[in-house]
Length: 385
Image 1 (cartoon, rainbow, N blue to C red):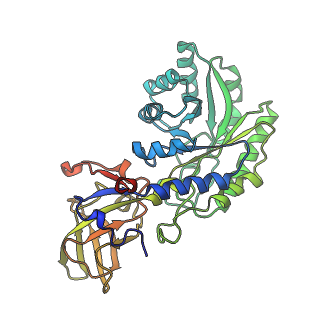
Image 2: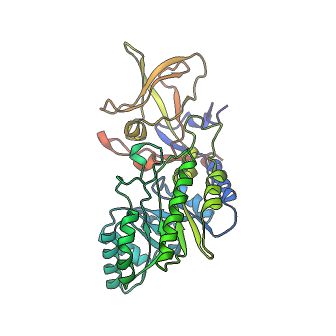
Image 3: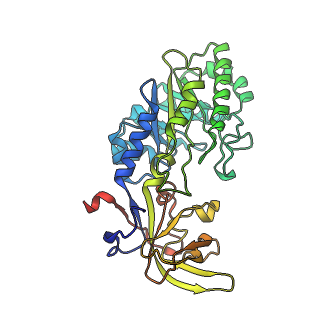
């Protein structure tokens, strides 16, 4: 039975709101760290998955680094107490202002995504009087076999430089005076369930490493990104991702050099299952094909179903009787504002409370105020202890 079923402490709270299970979050991070084991490894938490301050406070307790993709994320990381020496700054479109911010905080490294960006970084570093560390993000042309919008490692994606560009870039890298080339970075996509995709990535990593060794580069860092998926279909039965299988793929197949550190950037797999969007049913609206279940939450609170046609498990917290097919929709003035079509749920009535599960990643952070909707609050399980 779901831990959310008959959650009496929800009844008096105005909906919609995000609910986070702190115990599950802690258990997930502990499981990830155990799966990784001891060695020259470092996990950086991907802020883009969820930058809620309470979430970050929990993440920080476990000594994780920060993976940031905007200047504001870098600022939030420093503000929350993440060590700048463990902050990475990625992103294909860093502005000069954001680069200068990273320089001011003296972060561990920039993940550079183009040769023009590298030249700008060297120029701005020279003005600042600092020697700036960077890793080159390589586009390995590996199909992550996931949704096209969250695939990032194919040749036609905007991210990183190709292997051909890397060959041409060697003289440029050696000529730059104000930057230090310390590593290579990869990230092939998100919500990857087929671990063989990571084995293909490892093969590309080893290929790039051999190329760089041929040019006398022995880099101290390799960053393989993240992308490990979660089970959206059965969040209760499979609340924690296969971290050991994921990490073992890299540990067993990647040819690390002596004194080389392997970095991971995990987001969704750490926080997705601990979060749910809690909503109430406003109306049951009969239609020709099915019935519309209209909620007080919509795409403004959780856009993933509208944007990716993604599935989130939905459960009725108020009733477990009967079975009726519904289109579960929100109140927003868009036909795309739907959480599920033709979904069988217990017979539902106005006022019933629903949990839309696996919403701890890319839920709250992607919320909007379209239709002048209010920003919904977040509530944590330890608020009730």
